[in-house]
Image (tube, rainbow, N blue to C red; front, side, top):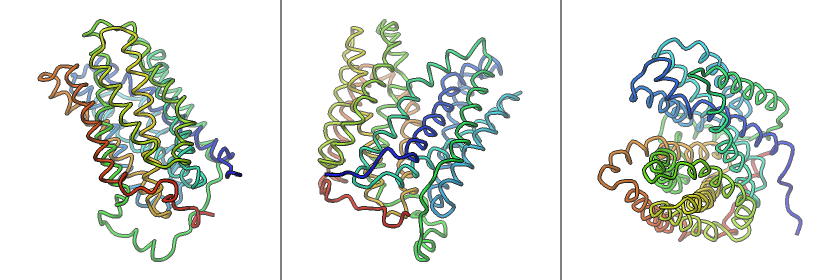
Length: 402
């Protein structure tokens, strides 16, 4: 059977832009706290806020751009996000005090939020509906690659409290993204008068796509589980004396997350949502449990492999579900809704979990989160899985996209 073409010029360019934008994000995120304390003599709390205010900016952007991205045009939105991210990155070179840094980081977050929402929406518009799971998996693969390369490169470039190298490279990457956007051909979305009218006003439905909220809620809890890895894996490795093996944790995570994307995406399209989603919950939970029982380096890396496979598969397929079940003219809103809940989980998870660790310790925390992931699997069944009709349910949303 002939399949619609996936690797079009537009899809490749959009994925490259997505990779570059996320790479620019990670170049500074991993060292901004140390920079703030070293150069601006900030407290640990202020350093944490310098990280968190970026996420707040991204959340703010997603909240407002999702409701109007199809109306304004996804390519225009992408240009706006990239240029704002670029200019605020250059402004960061002139940072003189904490207040200035907070303002610049907030603007960077807005630029990143707009740009990443735009690339995700463009991906959903140009990928054939019958291959959306596969396309979303490949798109998410580029995000995973940036997660693997960005932190390593950011730490390598960061010298003696000097952030300039990181910022200059980030600005170059964003400039290349602007050039790539110029040659990116984005399909036009035609909206009816009724659809345009529905998008006006400030009702809750104009900020969130109702049909995407159930899977977004599950994503919030799953993201909290992953935030325990981002926020505390380094401290846990020190506690169990596995610092050397820990250096390879995210590399193993990225390898398995990337390697799984092609076949899990195809299975999603061919066999349906549930065929891929239920195993992703189980594999992620196994990874967290292995982590909680780790005493040796190979177990730590095995946990990274399971977490990469489970969490990576969940995120790309859950995004595809959010898009598939939403109306075609609200794909942008569905994308922003999904990422808003993801950002909330990743951004505020460490704050919540930090209050629990003194009572459970790290091992108890990862055991508890493994149970939470299994609970999320049952929540998925009640909110989506029980009504999913697999492949036959996927509605061809390209009818309004020309």
